[in-house]
Image 1 (cartoon, protein in one colour):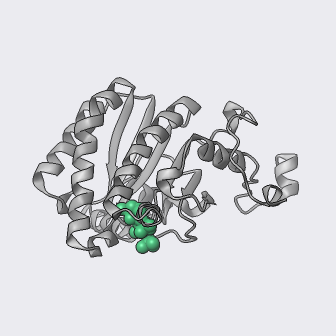
Image 2: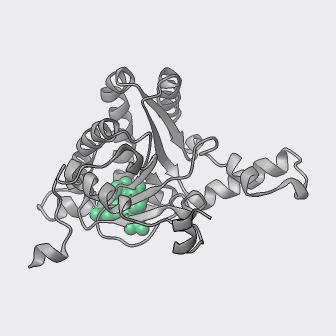
Image 3: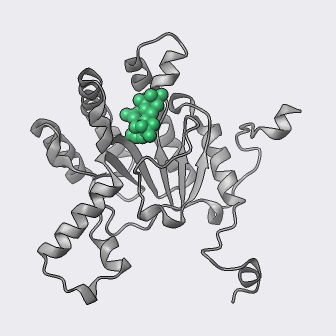
Length: 254
Ligand code: IPE
Ligand code: IPE
Ligand code: MG
């Protein structure tokens, strides 16, 4: 009976048509620490497993035909964590680039970054910039890494740039602001997944997510596998995006 209530992941049980696949999926990869704690392991091990899971989800996303994947890896608020954990997360980013870059490039992944790179160690900044430059012409899947990212900080950054560019007030509209965000040129996310059961946005894509479909799952990030992703996509396919309009309007295509 519980199965009727809970969404049980069943991979490929229901095939999705290409037009049902969201173009841009964003994921708040949360729950690494709790995953580890539940196993009596250090948080570090949760982050390590979370990174392993990244490989699996990147592969699955490309195979499914998702075009843009935005991944929340480190928030501007995460600097408030113990120093050792922050250092660990920086090291993880570095080792992911070292280990995975060649293969990602070969698979046609275009790596991008959103957030403030200037606050991280120069050596790591350089690595990220080189990875972006190496993969810039790839077009199979855009992977947008949100690292030292915060939605409010992003808006502040955009406002400063707009003022610095001397843009007059009457020229400021939603499109212009979008074009000054870190995600400039990319369409807004269609689906935002959050693992670990939290029901909040934690400063992620607060402008771009205005009309995203949200999908929370209790699963911790290291356990969020292909079947879970499929489940999220199925849920998305069954949502009705009204964008403020009525069902009647949608049916009659008015
Ligand atoms: C997500 O897992 C990774 C980062 C925020 C860097 P957490 O580290 O937040 O794990 P929990 O939420 O404490 O379980
Ligand atoms: C959000 O997770 C940030 C990332 C997943 C990178 P947090 O674990 O930092 O969020 P809160 O603190 O629970 O809201
Ligand atoms: Mg967390």
